[in-house]
Image 1 (cartoon, rainbow, N blue to C red):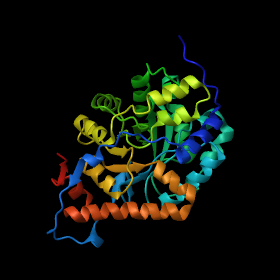
Image 2 (image 1 turned 135 degrees about the vertical axis):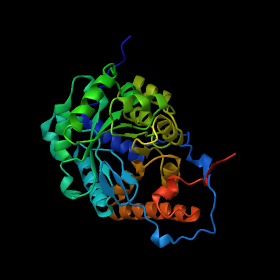
Image 3 (image 1 turned 45 degrees about the horizontal axis):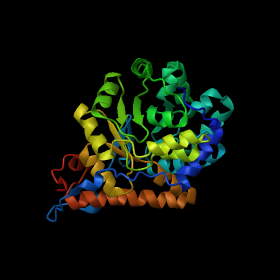
Image 4 (image 1 turned 90 degrees about the vertical axis):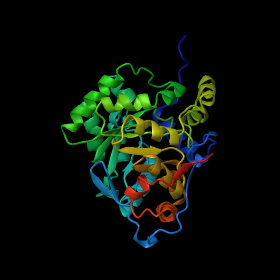
Length: 349
């Protein structure tokens, strides 16, 4: 029996997603798993908080801290307004930043203007974003390059969201996934454009990470469960009651973020790894990095801050970086290498 049709139009769905993420009950009840880990205090380290160095690189470019403003929105006026605010903050702090799915703009050139925000972040690392489902249906290197050119991006995210698609009546034929992704990775690599694959919040298994690495991705975003559940977002946004049921049925589906980080690291010790999913403060960032991530990325908290205004975004980033540095100070890690190789992250009994 075929699934019911979800009749919500794409622009309307973008606005509905924004409203749901800003005001709806869309969080996981399950946790990220980060709370299961604690740092052992180091009170006798020869270290200065003011001299801790958190600079690193992502997609071949220097960034001031291992913190990313995750892809969230785009394609509508309200999303453009919020993205401009977030891009300005990314530029000020020299943090990487991404846009939400560009599918709507690739299909309708009139909506491309809502993604024209590179002028707000002329020098920092920017990620374009297209769904794997579109590549499975026949899009190729040309469309991938158009997405990158549209926002003058440094890299491309190909997002993987089969559960979200199934819960909204979207693209559910992923039979061509590995071939399509390998083609995109090879084609863009020849142009000097790295391709990262990312989940949207349901986590990567070790097997999935290995498959994606074999496709030639330049990096991964494990995007685990514990923050925003996109199944629950779709439940709130669905026009069809069947999809509301599906969204709630799978609202707790997913691999917790802490576990997803470790899954990727079991698959590869070296692949650049962004960790998203329920990271809410600088201590969470520190734990994610100590577990194996290279960068921690945040979506809904950044969006909620942007909804308040630029001062709230700036204050939130200030506290994120400050909390990360205090955690490093507390374990005697003067730089990110010291944090990532610390023996002082201990699993709770």
